[in-house]
Amino acid sequence: MGMENKKDYSVIIGGAAGQGSRKAGLIIAKLFNNLGYNVFIYEDYQSLIKGGHNFSVIRASEGQKFSIREKADFLLSLNEETIDKHEKSLQKNGLIVFNKDKIKREKGVGIALDTITKELGGISIMGNTALIAGFSKAVGIEWEDLEDALRKELGKGIEKNLEIAKRAYEETNTFLKIEKLKVEPDPLLTGNEAIALGAVKAGLDIYYAYPMTPATSILHYLAEHAKDFNIIVSQLENEIAVINSAIGSAYAGKRSMVGTSGGGFALMTEGISLAAQSETPTLIINSQRSGPATGVPTYSSQADLLFTLNSGHGDFVRFVVAPGDANESCYWSGKLLNLAWKYQTPAILLVDKDLSESTFEFDRKVLDQIKKENPVLWNGKDEYGRYADSKNGISPLAFPGDKAVVKATSYEHDEKGFSIEESEAVILMQEKRLRKFEEMEKEIDSLEAVKVYGNKNSKKAVVAWGSTKGVALEVAEKLGLKFIQPLMIQPFPQKQFDKAMKGVDKLILVECNALGQMEKVLRCHGIKVDKKILKYDMRPFTVEELEKKLKSI
Image (tube, rainbow, N blue to C red; front, side, top):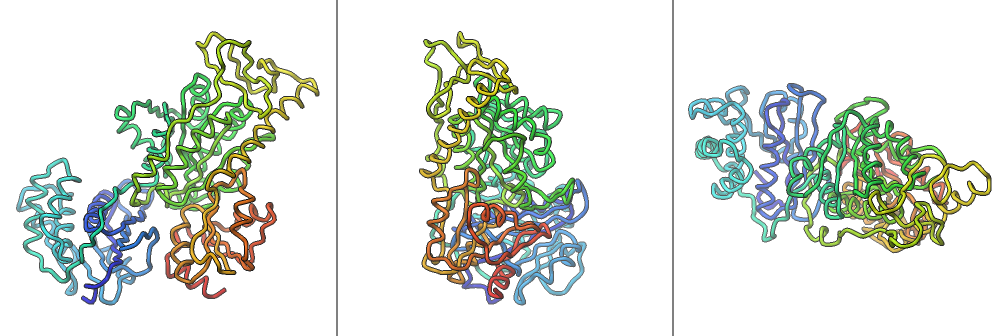
């Protein structure tokens, strides 16, 4: 096969919605993970419950990679459409594993998925297990390793699945032997699962949401583990109810988080403004998908950046962070929950479909960096004013039941929370909140708000944010370029970005939108982008695609 000495494999597995290709892909990824390979999974699916075409791309590599390549080494097909769509994406010496009961072809590894499943009394979805087993035998994965993975992943009907797997395994030949690496595997998490864990570690009490792809799996994950995490999970009727309920819970002293995507986030913007004026801590997850409007609802984009930075009416600044992988998503969801409570302001974690739903190897040590940080609380003795003026603009918090009158209001107000319209009083409160934002800017100086990778002495640099980090980092390192990743977008980390730009005379922006939105942000802070590489077909850059574009500049 010519692949025996490789340590970087790419697998495509596909089928129709309802055939279980995603679950099968996860099991294959865990097989590689157990062999010591770093694993990344990109998910691609249509907005259909049944039918259409779904596929997963699994990247298994010796070093950490979280991007996808143009060509695959293996194509696993549950239906003929998968071969029709992806055979052109297979390496010349690549291997196709397919259901020979439904697909007639001479080359590749044919497995009688339907026949084996029927003869052994299984149900049709168990044909996936036969496909996984046949692939495992073809690439030299030991039966014991396969059985262990199946037992961990398939709780229901495990004995029947193992019987089917054993039969398919025994009827398949071995074509190559994938080398086992001497590396302890890390757990695999989606970006959304990492977000959920970070918030829980920082003391999350309540999660509110209305289902909207690609943020929905946060709701599912937290609902499934609500008792384990000792939290409340509430699905409400729409996003307006979601944001207002979160504000109400925070007013009562409970740490709240909400999750949505662009259309739902649009409905939340009046609530975000309410949280800013009432100085109520609120964490919002905006997982971007294609737009405008419904757009291409199960595909990704980075086109909500400017909208997020300017969401809500009136003069106020909020925290906005755009992580680039699962580790950063976990850390920053926890950190933002703490920052929202410290500064009593909205905080937004800006992710996207490719980050939310892709699967990454997760470093458990990240959780050790997160803990619940207490806000400034009323001492219970002095006369209480919810919006008491202070040197840094932060007023002590009290909650109903604390033997104090705790007012919260959307109107401009005095220190006690009573509505005002007099000029001097309005100025006092505006300036009080502005001092708080000055403190927020100081806060980010102590955080790693900008990361720098690659050749740090290069005069040419690539800047990318969010889920585009993975591919930009890999290509920049390959080409000997500096790579700059802004994490904190608002308040903007001016000092850190200027330091990252030291020695750079050519800056190339890479992002997945049509307008180059990050370029506009950087320009506002005196940073010139020389060239832009933009992609807006709602799919991520492949390594080869971005490398070619960078080489042409």
